[in-house]
Image (cartoon, rainbow, N blue to C red; front, side):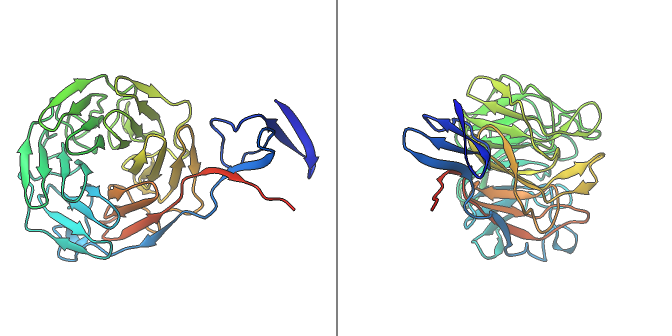
Length: 340
């Protein structure tokens, strides 16, 4: 690898192939294609206002927090969203929320969710104690299915879908929370213990699939300390990434896949009383701060969608929130730079 210094007096690397893990803003000259290239977004990723949660929700002033979500930006499901344990279920059509007659069998809060609007999975959470309850939603009703081997509340991480999911972290006690590293795999009927996280934590975010997952952020021992630790799951082991979130936090939202993810919101200042709207984009190896974050800083949101079309709703920051925000983004990618 050599350096080319003929453009604006800056050092531009000359390479025969594009770097495998570039960072945003990096520029190089590809001698094979004879092109000047850079790694960046061509548009600014941003949040926009969506429809508020119903004013008649179970929580004070229509605000909801510490529930879960599933589905897409235009066809989402929210459940367990309340000030305390709840069975409530709501649907979102891309414009407004509707309370559904279907209710979960086990009232809970601080739970996790995945899947689609018509095939969702509700996992763990807290009743008066940590819960092992697992329920499936079929678009009409909730049905209890195989319980977790280790009961966990306080927002354990979850990836996958209704028939192939992975649950990791959380807390096995009520208060104060006891952070755990336990990980379990779901086959649509029952849970099986898998190798544990390297860092025990609760209030973390997770995304991806059952065999290719990402865990990030959370509350770590001793005590209650915000973390930016990021770990990758390959179907058999968890590996700690050398770099973590730029803003350490707990109670955050997370969307996407292992190679392209989104982290947003959460509590960023010990002991976790200051909410943030900070939004970061993951490219498979590093997190990059987005110029703009959530309009309403908060933690404990429900969330659904993907890294390019996401949804964050409810939460706390301080006070219960009823706002919904919709994320529109593009993957960071290699761009050809045109010069004249």
